[in-house]
Length: 255
Image (cartoon, rainbow, N blue to C red; front, side, top):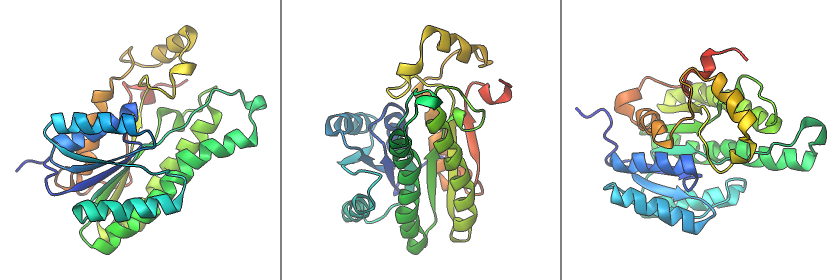
């Protein structure tokens, strides 16, 4: 038995055109899932679709704003018209800012919370309801952050939003468990990507690596195994409510 075979499954990856989301989407496709690549930048989404097809998978690009419930409802309808089912939802949208706390405006707070928290909650509500009603189980994978647990300076709102994602993940894991819909989160460590490059000054980089036992940043491909594991009901069918760390040991350190 291939524990990681996702053949016959449909995966919806919101934020699937981002650096990390796109790389995990490629892994889901390479292991047999039909992948709906969801994002607002069509060019980036098409690039991820191409990578999935080169890896032997099947993918289609969809456009949706995760902060808008009507967009997500339309997305669900469009994916169902494409494959007839949704088995895996990955919530990988992300917005960050290095604004110091005393300079933070509530407009910026709201904009980050809209994407990182509201978008995740709405997607879990809309796609989770479909999975429950579908009656065949499913897997929801929320992408959190290493900054969700130790409070890290310069990313106050981002950290608060991701801490809330952890809480939402555990709550929904309990809520959906009777329907065999599993809800887990991946907690990446520091993976250089578009949204965090602006905070990675030489001083910041030195500080981060000094608290990372493996002494380096992660490579996006190092998240693929965690994504496929949590997506597969064969490999992780009794795993729900977990926060799976992929952080080079960062979580074992005190800061």
